[in-house]
Structures are given as structure tokens and as C-alpha cells.
Image (cartoon, rainbow, N blue to C red; front, side, top):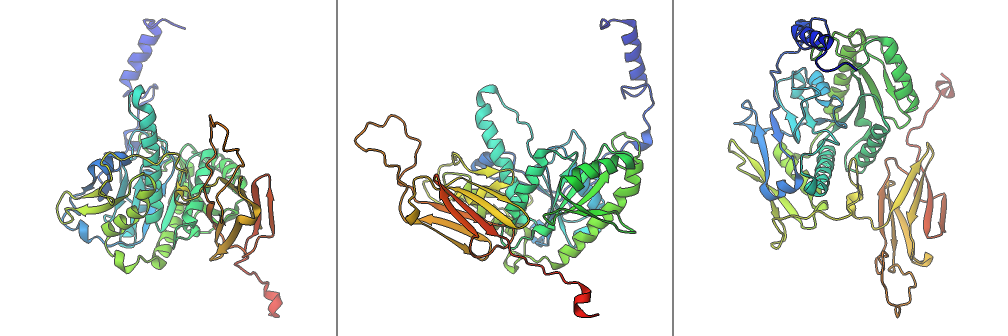
Length: 477
């Protein structure tokens, strides 16, 4: 390795400086550099720390175009973009709404960011951009443990409230990873448990920002869409093809920007697919928005946000809190969070051992028992921990063809001799069983298999066939 004062390295450094600091002896093409964004979000609900929001309130940042009328914004259908950190969510939303929002590897979205104007699509939809998942934290070593928990709960809260608010969910991935697959699965499961939501309104956008030619794209699509999701291709003559996975979720593909983005050269693959993909997605969004309606008592956007935040914020803290809108008609509004119980501390404490995944609190945090759920095209398979419960005390029910409930009439018992001196005990005895799980698809009212073995309740529950297919010749045509 050459020393730092080597003439060759000095010559290279001079060459870089002469070529606009690109790092390579090629002149940067100014035509491909994206200019400063001219568009901003209409409303940003800043949630950097859920705990600090309880202590200090949630500020709402308004663009000048909506400052005087923000409290009158109607709660039209909402399309949101979700995804892990730095996957291109803001870029995708910009393309869909035909805007120039700040989008790059070095810029990050704050909290919940809304688009309510500036676009023809805004007449029928509100766009919702979100802070990415797994963003790094800034803290000292001494506070890292608490800060990681706060960051984790804050991100989960943002994702969960986004699903409650959204009528259509776009999940943006780049090169597919196992984390992406798990994230999609958990979002789908969570969304299916929210009243009034349709999992068919989840769309996966594969934003292949490093694919520049069709051969690259075809290879990635084969591996990461068709094979990873058992997806079937549907081709349009005028629009880009799309894919439908085994779970019914639609997938579309975008490539590197066709016009050049942040100094990159235009992409041939992007020229062929990006515009057509955006047109197809916009067509779907307009169709979905035409049949999505908000309840009449939630006619204003801020009321709709407040009501849904109140549904879930209590799951995260030991104390119970309620949101109220402060200065609703002023230029600098905010949500204030007050304790329902007069004794609720303004120094909030998170629920310990809260059951969460990447999409939110699991079943509202109400389950007392761990479980594992698997599925195939025909059945759901559940293993539920029932250690310490007698078989005679257990009962179950399936309601609304989607919700399984398992409970016990007696507390769990481990038969430990009470006269002995206990020096360690992880068992939670005297606890009744309360288990609830909502399936993404309708199921039969009775399990096809039920077994209690080694303290584990094993259930096999058959999915209902909700769509009947017939061949035309069956009708003698």
C-alpha cells in the first residue's frame, strides 16, 4: 500500500477535485442531478420518541398552504408507504403523487407525514409517508439500553397507527431480504385483524434501485418475486406486468430512475417499466379509493387520527393515557396526552415484556400464553402453550369465522409443594388462560384436529373456500 504522501495518490486527489468530487475521472453530468425539492409535506406529526410525546405532547408541523384550513381537512381514503430503513419509500410516494419530495440515502422522513394537496391524486386520496424501521439512535453508551427500547416502541407505534389509518398500504422493498419477508407477513397479519381492513389492499413495490437493464431486472424478479412469493405473472399490453402471490397480495416492480437521480445516469430498465408501473398503481389506488369510505363521525382528518391513536397508545404504557387536540384552530396545533387515571405519572413507563413484532402489538398485548401459528393453502396450524392447565378446564370458540378464543376456568397449577422454600420461580401460577387470535382468512367453526400433548394444545383449523370457480362448459354454453 502506498504512503499517504505518494505522488500517485496526490495526483489522484487533484484529479478528483477537478472533476466535481465524483471520485472518478469522469465529469458529472449536471443534467442528471436532481434539483432541490420544491414540494413539502402538508402536515407532519412529529413522533421522534413515544415517551417524550407523552411527556410533552405531539407537535404538528403545517405547511403554509394548509395552515389556515388544516382543521377542516376531510378524512378521505389514505394510502400509506411502509418499509424498512432506506428502501425508497419517499421516492415511491413522490412518483405516485407526481411531486418532488426530498428523497435520498441521506434524508429521512419524520413521524407521520401527510400529503393532502398539490396533486391530482390528492383529490381522492391522502398520502402518508412514514419513518423507516430500524433507524439508528443517537445516545451515550450509558443510556443505550433505554434509548433502544424507546426507539423500538416508537417505531412499532408509528407502524401500528399507520395501519389503523390506512385504506391502502404500499410496502416498499429493494433487494428482498428475510427481514422484508417477515415484515410483509407481519403487516399482513396485523392488517387483517383491524376492523374494516382488506388485505387485498396491500401492494408490494419492489424498488430495484440498482437494476439498470432488463436482464438484471428479470433475474431479480424471478428469484425475489416469482419464487420467493410463489407469484403468478399477469401481463398488460399498455401497462407494466404485475404479480400475485400465493397469499393474494399484488407485487409490482420499479428499476433505477429513468431520468437519472441524485447524479446517476438514466436507466434503460427504468425507461421501460417505471412509468407504466406508476400508472398501474395509480389506477389501482383510484379504484380502491372509490369504494373506501370513512365513518361519518370521523369527517375531519385530525379527529380520525386522534381516535385511532387513542385505540392503541394504552397498550404501550403501564398507565392509561388519552389524546386531545390542543389549539385546533391555531397556527401551531399539537396533540396533548393526558392520564386517564389522575394518578398517572407524567414520567411514563413502558409495559415490560410487551409482545410486539414489526407491525405492532400482538393481539393488543392481551394474550397470556405464547403460541406458534403456521399455514398452508388449506389449513392453519396452531401450537398454544397450556402448561399447568387441566384438560377439563380448557374450552375454545371460533367467532365471526375469524377469531379463535381459548380459555380456562381454573388458574394454572404446577403442583409445587407449598411447604418448601422457593428460591427461584419463573412460573406465573394463579393465572387464568386468555388466548385470542384473529385469522387473515375465514375458517371453519370446528378444528379438524385437536390434541393436548406435553402441555401444548395443537389445533388444525381448515380455511373456508370463499371463492367458487366454475368452468363455462358446465353451464352448457
